[in-house]
Image 1: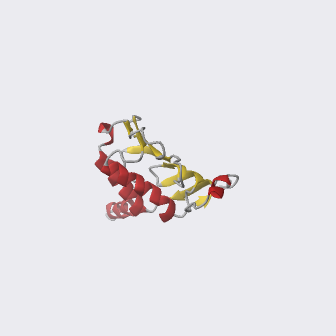
Image 2: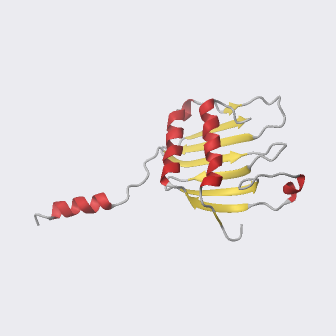
Image 3: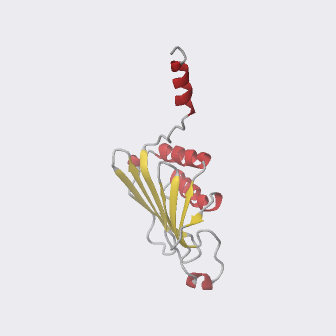
Length: 162
């Protein structure tokens, strides 16, 4: 009986701790431009799982007009590595999301991609940011680049039938 508290402590400390975040869902959509911009929608969950609905130029660089007639890339799934997930959460935390404007960009320029960031908080509130040109502010631009880099730095598995 005297070893029970020690056993319980070892048991509890060996259990994997869940990822503590303020977010229940992170969604990012990279919109089209008049060139070869990646076009996809990614959803990231607090358990580090991510789904990407890849349309064009998500996993490779386009280089000809023929690339536009290729079939949609498909739907893929991954589990983000811990380092990438932690960096993503750190970047989101530093943004002070709720204080950001809902809309950024100069619509007088006609060939820029639009990003859509939707973050659902654990309290069920939602923050949406639409950013034409992906230059809302420096921290947002870094976040977009980081999320887009996940398409190259993580191992994605194509879901059957997609």
